[in-house]
Image (cartoon, rainbow, N blue to C red):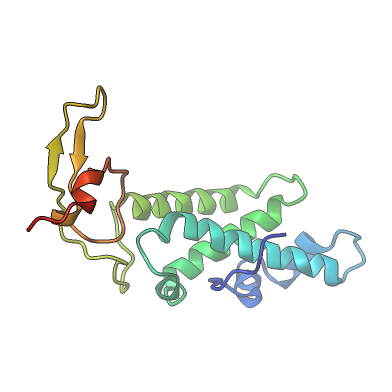
Length: 175
């Protein structure tokens, strides 16, 4: 089992507000005794962790986890994802309106991931200014001839793409 997440973005009461207490119990109660035992309660923890990781998949490259934990919109997306996971956990199809909520949440999170939208009230993880790279063309390579000269290029730590580096420029110190 994976380790516990440092930040989860919803609680059991959030899920109960979406599914209702009876809906949550019905989604978790595998032995149909009307109560939730410790093993079945573990499924709720799995749902919350899965939903938080689902949101992290889309939003963590652009936003810090501590900031995501303070967003109402992220809380809403996480509750929807956790409820979707709970309702489909046994192989059941999700309710139609719930499936629509889940699809809408995924579309919104995809817009965040691609940079078409931003979360309100939360600053980006890195600066939003344009980055540049100084490059040189190395004729010794048959493919990927353009090499980035890192010492004289943008130094921001997060890049959205892989760069072919000019290793000589990285280690040669000019007088």
